[in-house]
Amino acid sequence: MLYTVEKLLQIPTFLVEAMCSSSHPNRISGRNGYISSSILDRKVCGSSKSPWIISANPGQNIHLEIIDFNGESASSSFISCGSVYGFILERSLGINYTICGGQRRERTLYTSKTNSIEVHLFSKNSRKGAIFLIHHTGIIINIRIKT
Image (tube, rainbow, N blue to C red; front, side):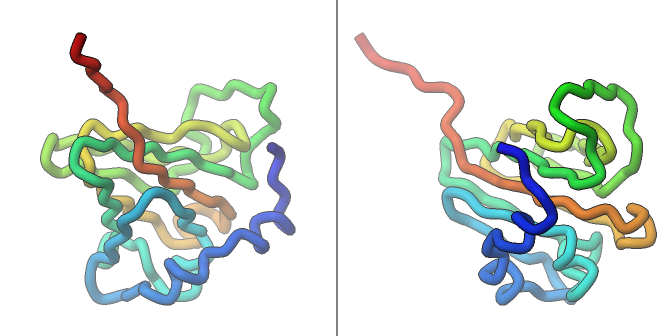
């Protein structure tokens, strides 16, 4: 599905914005949702002072996709990091993953190894005014069936 800026503005991010705090980490749990770059610009939520902490149920992992309005069409395959939008921290494993922008418009961003991650976003000036959405989903990766 191709997203446009008009479509971005229609996606309900109001629940995330309502619980946003600029003074402490912001916790998100549940099956799925969206984080918009615009919330950082309006409320300073998601910065390193108040990162998004996304938690899934025990035994689940967190799958992140990015919809990047500075990105190229789906046929593009950039490898380098055009702009740095922030980073993902999986603190318990010491993993720090850079959120790169300016690549494909829609792509998988990261799949966690655990059920809790932090998303730190950089300010509008640092990311050159880029507009993007991060979609988070709790998923089960390893399913073992007893026979």
